[in-house]
Image 1 (cartoon, rainbow, N blue to C red):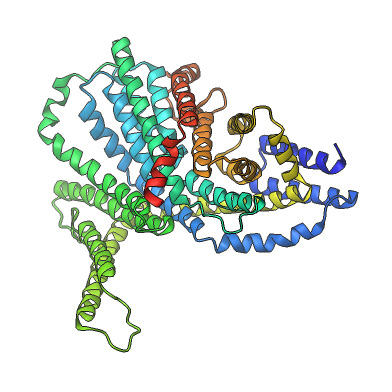
Image 2 (cartoon, rainbow, N blue to C red):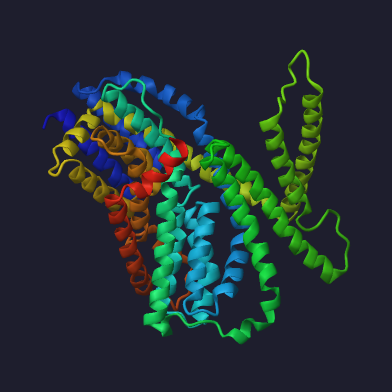
Length: 540
């Protein structure tokens, strides 16, 4: 091994070590990269011209339309979390399934899937469900281990169920890696791999995991009925007449939002970025709808009069206006910069202007209501903080990647993976094990920006399908976040769990779900069509 090869290995090891100490990720990646660039230049094994590409990398990040979806999806998720939609969902689903043995656990799994599809933020989902569900489940006599494991597993579904922040970032990296791999193979007009492809590929595996979680809850309820007791039917008798209305009110708006966002991507109506904008606006309307009912109850108690329309009418009006605008755009030529405009197109343009005014009216009322309840400022601050963190890490990772390649790191990785016994299977197994271990210590953002660009092009050159690879990586990281003793989800739940729940209870509770995750990985590894069938049907 020459000095150049040794430096890139030492550089990667030093970066991981400094991250474990606790230094900020972005500055660690950038700082370590500059230090080793200086060492390599002094030793005569690094060409400083690699660093000249850094401004172009930053400009490429700034002009990448796919990455615009990141702050929009973050805004959507944080808005739904802060507007307490999750609380209403958990309460309603608990009443719906509560009289069945294991019903609360089933409700947690279903709500976890819905929150994953509408927020995609793992830490927030685990904390929210831990605060709301865990005390209720313990009070109802649930085994602490089962309750903790159910919440942790359901909370990490945001890693794999689209639209997920993980899949957006992973899809962008895999797209670049696929083009790089195809160019290395001599294909100068490669097909593109989009975030929409990864969303479609992850949908069936995500739903499969939800089904496995629910099936496990039902088996435990049958084998150990004392671990998952039902809620006595008489306790819910008073709410039975109102239950249907509560279910519709709690489930219909989030499901409509999920279908609008995910459906528009999968059907090709909108790009992920455009769908993220729809999701952000939909989250504002949904939050305004939620706060309008709280305001209505308050006015009923105080006898006051509303200053704005209450109920769902502003949101319904805005949503209807958007549907009308899409319909008009699909059937009429809406361009104004024309010499002559036919009467039918002119009428369509006038109607579109009226619909725009209606949409603005509905959004304005929802924004005012969300602002008056103190939610909007908090959401904007959190969105800005998380988005800034993601993009600063992206810039640091870009610098790290340039220096690593300048030191011949890509050649080292390729030589290492291609020399693995077992060919593609051996290389894939090694990558999965390495990512699984790194998932104990590093967040998905660092792994996505640092590790994936190094290994993905090599695996794709060996013939690995990019969509299947992305799904396997996402589920692998989800499994790592669940696995004791270092899983991030375990720490999130430990921070909000009551003292009566021991750490060993949390560890014991997640182990069966970790087993289910590993089984799902094996199934998808053997039947790759679970991940590749839907994208081929929708986009080919």
